[in-house]
Length: 391
Image 1: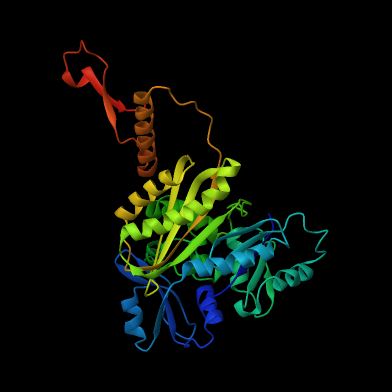
Image 2: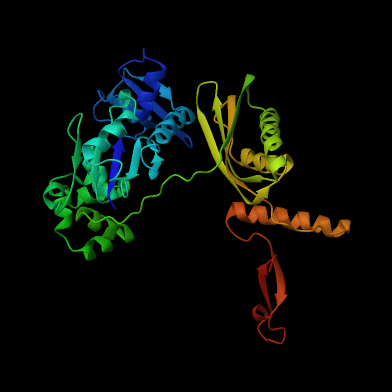
C-alpha cells in the first residue's frame, strides 16, 4: 500500500510557541513518569538532548534552560485539528503519535493526478508554523525514513530497490526500544547496512522476537498495516476549580457534575459509556491521565463515579489540582436483560456485576470457589479444585 508520511518536528514545542511567542529559545518540555521527570521535547538549538532523557541529565548538559510542564491535552487538541483537516484530503489518516501522521494513497489517483498536486493539497491543510517534512513510499518504515530525510521544503519518494538508501542510515532510526539500540551499538552494528548483512538467526538469538523485526526493517521490509482514525462520537468536558485542591471529594464532585452534563445527552438516546479518559492538571501544570474501560456500557453517573473513585484512590495526583476534564471516546447501548423481582437476587446480580468490573480492570479472575473433582481420590489435592466464581 502506498503511503504518505507527514512529520511535524518538535510538535509540542511548536504548540507552546504558538501559544506563547515570547518563549525562550533554550526551552525543554518535561513530563512525569512515576517519580521521575523526563524530557518530552526541547529546542533544536540544545544539542545532545534526547526524548525520554532524565531532566537531571539535561540540566547537567545545559544549565540555563527554561523548563515547561507538558500540556498534553492542548497538544492533542491542536494535533486533532490537523488530522481533521487532512481527512478532507484522504479518508485514510492515522495519527497515533503526536507529530507523526500516515496517509493512505490508494484510490486517490482521480483526485490528485500526480504527487506534486497531492503534496500541495496536504501542505495546505498544515499550518506553516510546523514546518512539515513529507515522504512517499510503500511501507510505514520506508515512508517514515523518506519523510525524515526529505529535502527542506520538498518531499522525498522511495520506489523500487531502496537498499542503497538504507545502507548508510544509523541504527538509531529503527522503531525499537532504547535498550535494543544500545545493544546494537555494543555489538558494533551502527548502520542498517551492517544489520542487513547478518542472518536473521543470530539477531533473534540476541533480541528474541524483536530481532526478526530488526532484520526485516534493515532490509526494507515492513508489512505494518495502516490504522486509520475511526469516526466515533466524542464527548469532552472540562472545568477549572476555584482554587487548587488535593481533596478527592472535591475532584469527584467536579467529575460528577461533568458526567451529569454528558448523561443528559446520552440518556435520551439510550446510550452508555464504554470508555472514558480522565485528566487533571496541577497548579504548576503537571499532568495526570488515566483511561478507564467498562466491560458493559455504564448507563448512570453512579457506576462511572464508583470506577473513577477506585482509579483515583490507587493513582495519587502529582500535586494540588487546578483543572480537570474527561473525554468519552466510546459509546454503546446496554444489552437487554430483565431484572429479577426478588431483592435478594437483584443484590446478588449487583455483586456479580461489581466482581466482573473488578476482574475486567485487573485483567483476570480474582474470586474463586472450591469444586469437587475427585472426592474419592486418596490424594487430598485431587479431591477439589479452584474455579473462577462465574464458572
